[in-house]
Length: 248
Image 1 (cartoon, rainbow, N blue to C red):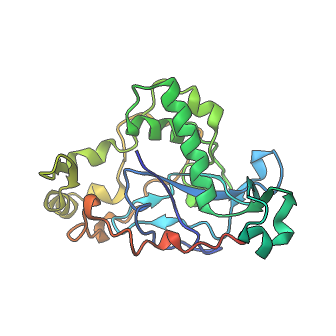
Image 2: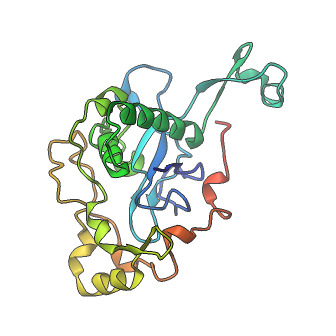
């Protein structure tokens, strides 16, 4: 199971391209929300630098978001970071930082709790539990994915839907004990089936979810280019999510 940050290269007013590893539709890709220093989730908004958009294959990302601004963290006294940004020190040994790389670990922590309660859950079920329980933010639409993390609600999900259900027919054995995307089959399907331009990601009934009004139908499948891409050979070195702007 992989939890990945969506990246800090986002723009305030439009989508951006998303790189590896967060562009893999099977991983749990996490964006950042700004809680505006309140406990009320209704005033949460996407952090302006939190990346959102579509992957090269047309998959909308992030999957969900979590707090990522003004995050207070422990830091050793005498370390370089508090010396360079003393205004961020809230008390000795603690300072605040921002970034999707702080949001992703929050989701990872909830994943650990979900697996402790449901050790038989598959990675897809864990992802489904996180997404179906997320708090939908109507003002943000898909910029934060399906919504913002609700840890308590996610733990209570006992029969999560599979958000990757309709992608699985395109997986094949890679000959090394793992799976790779079947590029030829995918290309033929996209060319021969116009319905993929408004793909229904899963046959599960999501209508009861808090984020049921989320827009999943705008993915541009027809411009997808899977012919030079497999998940097992992703280029992690050129990953754009490593270009952190964790200073806002």
